[in-house]
Image 1: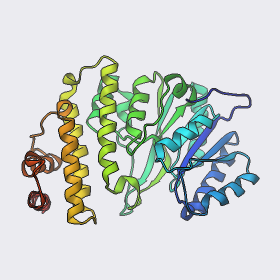
Image 2: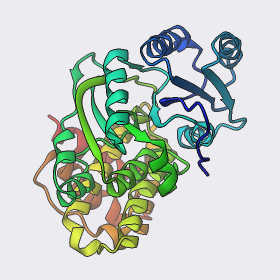
Image 3: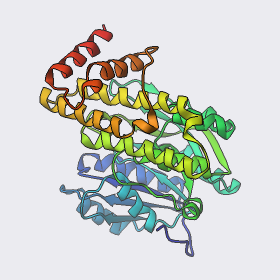
Image 4: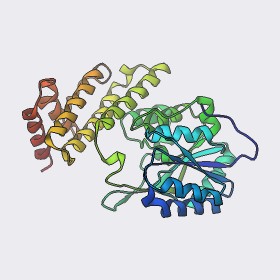
Length: 347
């Protein structure tokens, strides 16, 4: 449960989950110091998600000199969602911002945005970012226009996976999260249902066009690796969103085209990560079997996938033809056939 407010309330609480983050000690503390200088009423909560390096202890020592910093400990590693929930349970700020330990916030636009949110009593403020990919190229958000559109438009865009699903690019009013009891589920891709429910429930969504967040893509980060948790996570997140929509009176049948489109993209992304990973062929086969299991379990929700109009459609259609249809009897021969088709489609 997210607790209520108290006196002398900070304007914003920044929640930073981390695990074995000693390599980012200097950069994140410099970021926090700059934010505090521009937003002197801010507080920062670091959430240690079971780290085994020296960062938590050095951070606690640093916090003794800087009382606006607090260090909370999740003794058993449970993932970023559960760590963020721990932060939410102790946060006192009028607004909540989420920051990954290897990223940064630009303090001046962040300060202006927080001031705007307070003056306008915004429930959510979604903002632009510099997003640096693994190759060093910088892109920016392309989905902010959807948040200016009627709910029907952004809802369909979200289901089609055309909107960013990361909470790090949104400022949340804490009272709004409290009132709607919006918390993170366990597992990976925990951002998706939280952000979707927040968009759906909010009546005052503001769009801040300034670039506030500096996101650095790291090859070893959760979003760029592949394991069982990634497969379970994306299916659980998407199923949670659809369950939420049904509880709000929507019929899944009326959204089947958007659901299939978005689901195809998620499956194609998982397949791409499996094939291009450094895993052994045996491990790739095991992950493909798990993916096929998950697709069969949710078949009633997502239906068949047969389009071949784009690269992602072709990837998933080939997987269905060469592997999924033969599951659970598909083996290494079927996986090799799919892998060959995957590489051939990219030549």
